[in-house]
Image (cartoon, rainbow, N blue to C red; front, top):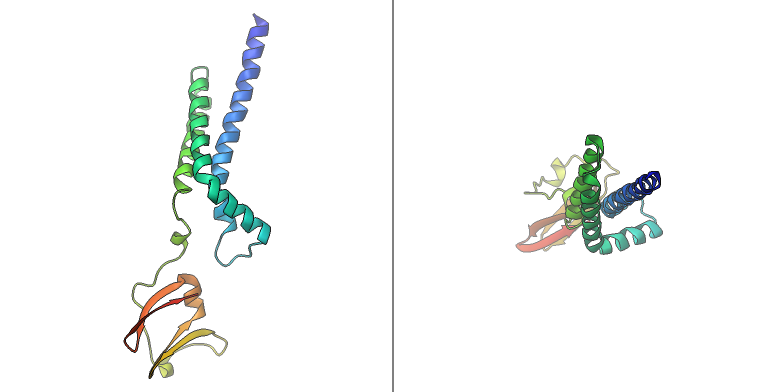
Length: 169
């Protein structure tokens, strides 16, 4: 009898380890690209390649991880204490949230589009001498877009001399 109990305890430890690894895998499918691909941060070639590869396989792999966490959680649930059940629930919530997040384009959430651009005349502009701008001239009309603002917003629809344009940085 003791041998059977020891085997079950060893088996449960293995299942708990697998549950934790699957939850960590699912979470990493979301966190690796989110951490590496950040605006205004250096991204090495290798890190960016890893992030893109993870982003590519994340939808399928995260669903498999959630299924594994669910199956293991159900298997471990009956013999678990309240604290262990909380761990199972946490692993399932994190895995499911990660599976949802890898299907979102959360990179767009980092940038806030300019709803309506406001312009002032060149003489009223309050820019330092070192401020860089992107300039557009179409016919007699010209616009200057501060790089600091464009780097944060990334895209702006505008009309210059009656011509619709898209300004991006």
